Structure formats: structure tokens, C-alpha cells
Length: 353
Image (cartoon, one colour):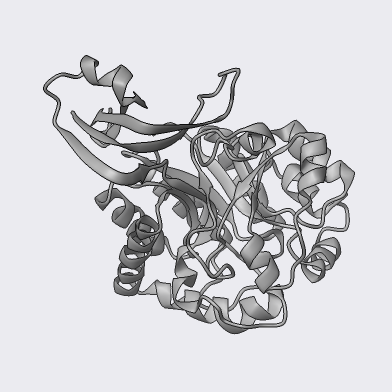
């Protein structure tokens, strides 16, 4: 057990009627090993109230410093770390000219491990202590990222990307094998320490109905894992989905049709929604990952915060590196005041430490 004395910015716990930010100008944070061996918060509050409860505990005095919660990044692509700021005229050309060529390099285990180590270090350097991340379609890219996160004691959720069509050689996977790989990786990593697995269709256009159906069956079989994908980011993308899935009511409902819209499902962007889509997010318990920097950089549009608040579905912030250009566009993991509290704690990001 160890204690830190400093100014402390914290937030009221879920269920607290005050639900507000709390600032202790002279505070005490006491940490002790948690169930997984990673230090966890044991007590926090004003120094004058807590100090007497912990006599003899080693206390580090950080005068002039502020201790605050770590950040949560709800949506980020670790294979795109080396292509931050790559310019393109919209999402689909950006994927074709920059993203897919870079992601092909992750077929090499050594390259995956090198980038994963740097990626985790950069997240931590920017104060991000929990992340929901995309790997690539290569299983070794998932192993590399989980391994790097485990070595640093980081809370990380990721999964093998599913993309069995409309993808180049070197990234396109085979339908049945992709699902077998997903279940094998899930069994290997989910629940190990602070790690969690996410079933990860890249986005509806990259997946055949067979692959989406298989992903939905896995999600039903493993209700405690997460689901992550993209939806309604770009108007050209939305039009493409309409062509590929003409029977679906909307882009979002494609995922519902295949059993991929539920609690612990996080969908990035959610820009081009109608009222029925917003209601579906609310009813299903899914949450949106909002990526302002990426959406501006790629010219995708603006997330409708008022529409989400009106309906009451959950959302949180994300960096979306490498479409986003900074590792710090994230959300504090502790509850926040007013409507921000609802959108900053979707189940995927603030899962138990």
C-alpha cells in the first residue's frame, strides 16, 4: 500500500446524487494491489480526513501537482500509428491509398510487436490508461498488442479485424478461418489480467453476410466480450452500404440484423443517423465513439450531441488515430457531471479494472 498527497481532481461515483467533479486542494490517494496485482484505488479524499486512517503508510508528497483519472480512448487503430496526418479526399480514398498499404505490413510479427510497444508507450505518455483498439486482420497483430498491453499493466480491449471482401490481398481474410481465429484469440486473451476481447468487423462493406452472421453468433455465444466497428462515418460509405445491403433499413440496422448491436457494442462515428437510428442505439444499449479530430480531418461531418442527448443513448470521446492526429482526444474514466456523465462511461471503456 502506498499513498500520494497532492491536489486531486476526481468525480462522484455512479449513484451519487451529487454526480459532480470534486477538487481536493490538499488530497490523499491511497493505492493497494488489486485482484490482478495492478495497483488500484483503495481510498481517496481530503488529506485531513484520510491521513489518520493510514498511519505508517508510505506517502509521497507531490506539492504543486494535480492527480487526475487516466483517460479512456473509445476508438483507436494501433496499426495506423505511423500514418498519422496522411492526407486524402475523404474516408474511402484514405483507406485505399494509406491505411490498407500500411496495415499489410502487420503480417510480419516483428513489425507488429515494434509498433505495439511504441503505441502502448504513447498512450501512457499521453495519460491514456484504457483503450478500445483495432488491430489488423492478422492474428499476430492481436497477439502483439495484447502482449504489449499486458507487459505495462494497461486496460486494453482489442480483436482481430474481420474483412473478407472489398479488401486488398494481404488484408482480406477467409470467412471460416477468420471466425475460427477470432474464437481462438478470444479464448487466449479475454479476461487475462486487465485485457478484454472485442469482436471486430472492420465495417459492414468489408464483410460478407456470412462473416457478419458468424460474428453475431460468436457475440451471442460470448455475451461478456465487446463488439466494435464503424458506422455512418461518411456519406459515400453510407451510400455504398445501401447498395450492398438493400434490405436493411439503415447502415446501423445492418449490424442489428446480424446480432451485433447490444450492450458492450461500441460503434465509431455515428454521424449520419436519423431518429430511428438514435432510438435503436438507445434500445440496444450500444454506445457511440465520437472522434471529433478525425471527423474534421477527413471531412466526414459532425456528431449530433443534442440528438444523442435528446434520445438518451450513450457516447464517449475517442482519438481515432490515425485519422485523428492526437493521442489525447479521450475521456476520463470516472463519471462526470450532467449529460457528460452519461456519455463518458459506456460499458466498453469503463469496465471493471
